[in-house]
Image 1 (tube, rainbow, N blue to C red):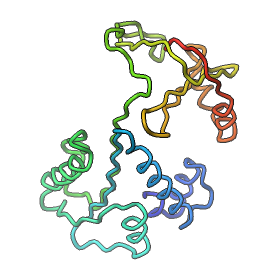
Image 2 (image 1 turned 120 degrees about the vertical axis):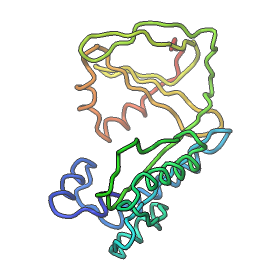
Image 3 (image 1 turned 45 degrees about the vertical axis):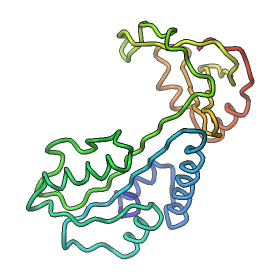
Length: 226
């Protein structure tokens, strides 16, 4: 949504980050179609996915018609006029209330206090809530505290779930890959775990579309202790 409203160096920088060198109407239509398909598939089998997009505009501020069409039609983001200048706090509360309503009450305060003020003219929001049921659920009695590795070598105690079952699994020279399915839906959760404690940055750099497709396509069903 931000990219469609950007121009010049700002647009070029955002497009480079999204690895989308020539953004245009076809790009936004494809993104919107993908989001719609994910929402459809992720709301099967008792799972829930809620996406709430919105554009909040200072009263009287005009929008270019093409930008307005993309936001409202493709991204399904209602355009709501608010008076940030006269009452920024009331505007913040209205945005948070709308977001909570569209995420089953799970995201109650998308915008923190003082995050917008009288100088605010436009706010774009995108909130996502997902509740998924594992195809192979964890037994709560198997949960126990264990050390979790942080960046810089530090550790903290965290609650680890445990189970042993058949899952799609594979390895690369630097990572382990696990796929966990959600019940009643083709949506799955794919985990890429570096084999070394300091290997996250290298793994992130190695994730390219073709490589990721090849890794996931090579996963095989194995008995795994998670």
